[in-house]
Length: 333
Image 1 (cartoon, rainbow, N blue to C red):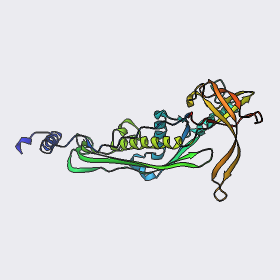
Image 2: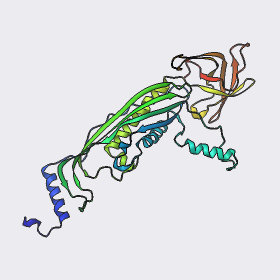
Image 3: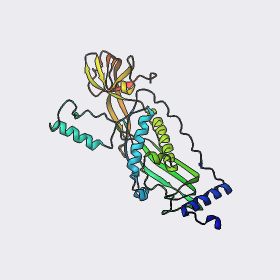
């Protein structure tokens, strides 16, 4: 042991580590390869408006980090939906603050051209709710660890196997009927073996840059990507519907425009609900009877509005009014 005489303890630990690495080579970043997320499918017709509601999570998922798992995953899912470019995404997590600003404007506490106007919120056609049923890590060491909490290497350096698993149970709800259009589960697991600093996720912010480079972060990214794919499939199975904002003579204004993907020349049906059929036992909406009033051909597109010329289905049909339904003509979606 005379070779170690006079060496600092930190230097001795590093030498032992290098000797161990030479004798037992371990890949620096061996990991399980995550399944690639499917490509987000195109959603026919105008863009659907979606919002992420409450995603529940048990308090035990927070662990020593004190993470707000449910709220953070809801915010991450909102960002993932925006990044997909397939939807119009509206914010609901901060709705109380938005309503407070509108109330201040209505009571003239706040004024000016930038003051928010009551009644101008964009309604969500679909909302996503759900629960986090799995969210955690499995970290195991190999028995070889150099350093320690009080060592020169901070949290220590060693061979370890770390992993993360995320499972979400989600529901896609049609806000017009309250019906659950789709219920699904997404789950991702990822593991990694190699030489890494020990100490786990302490001090890592959920959703921060460091988090996304961990196995749990990569599993979270994959689960969110899978959720966006399932949401796109769910909304694509239901037809898009807009509403008549204003009707004057043969001119109609629709409550969707360029942001929803509408273009000049698009043809839409104008329909009026006449009867809603519900289950007498559950109250669930089973269907709706509608009267077709005619068609509108869009001529002018604004970001949130579209104007078009109305052509009645029959001279005897009633004229359209505010609140009538606007539906893409079958075959043009």
